[in-house]
Amino acid sequence: MIIRAEDRKQTLSEHLRGGDGTVDKRDYLPERMPENAKMFAEIRLEPGCSIGLHKHTDEYEVFFFQEGEIVLNDGGEEKVMRPGDFSLCPDGGTHGIANRTDKPAAVYAAIIRTK
Image (cartoon, rainbow, N blue to C red):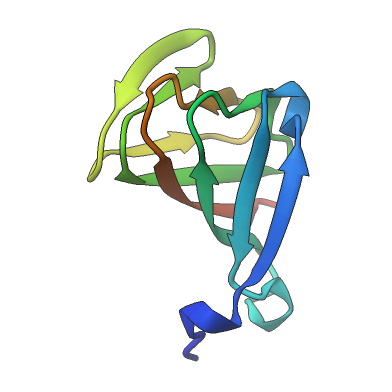
């Protein structure tokens, strides 16, 4: 299966999961994904934007950091993530991300159902 970047669905979400600003999410058409795939997307964060701390239940999420610097809150511990870095929020885990710089940042995200 091939999904072209131009075929992604763009969604702008304000205060996503209690975060700041407007998050630009570009989904790779979940209706064409395998049954256990909940989301594959590029998430763009302008300066000052964030996705609030949230828990994953019956799923896990992976992030591949693509552009800029993003502060990852990984279960209460904050780490600066840079292009090429990877993180995994396991089933039952919590995380959130924030762009605290003056430049845009982006991450690729995948959410996979465990049940």
